[in-house]
Length: 261
Image 1 (cartoon, helix red, strand yellow):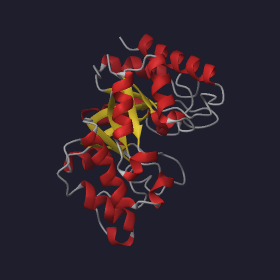
Image 2 (image 1 turned 45 degrees about the vertical axis):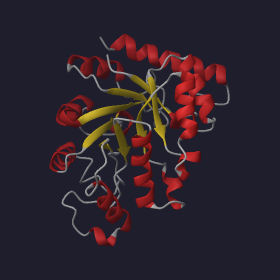
Image 3 (image 1 turned 180 degrees about the vertical axis):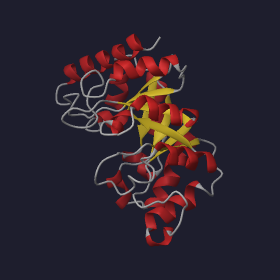
């Protein structure tokens, strides 16, 4: 069975210590750390202490959320993500694709974000595997005609020896079936961000438009054994009520376990 992780972004209004405590209480196998707080300054001691105190490993690291880029800058944020993964001995990192990046890397000079992104990921000696997160397929999406096409994404990752974090809620409006998309990408998928789509994105996995019960059985039949990360909106978890947060996380874990053989 895949290891079931909790993304710290699911509880970003809480302190990291509270996130560890809740994840331990609800019996997650580990965490996906989204860079924030002291980690933005390169201080990982607190994270290491929490990992040891709760005996709860961090298996993968996610780059800082968009708002945090304004302070350290794109290149420094990406390098910080790799540094965190190295210090915490994680297997992989997840990165968002730049909005204007093209599959053939053409004309990156007119998008400074893309230029810095390519400089870091295509010219590095970092050990953790680099996973690109699948993108939204919607009408007004700058890279809809590029990386929202799974055939384009799989070709790009194979060409540059990159991997994929498959986000289920990003497929809520996709013209492809979620199973077909997974099959196209499966050789490079090392993490799955699991959540549903209802009124919002990143809803509870057991409530929403995406048939995730069917999807979990599907990936089980495909012998998927990498990470399964619950990346749920704090609002879907009712973060203002810790009792309800724990109940919903427990139900989400049970939903996964019941549908993965």
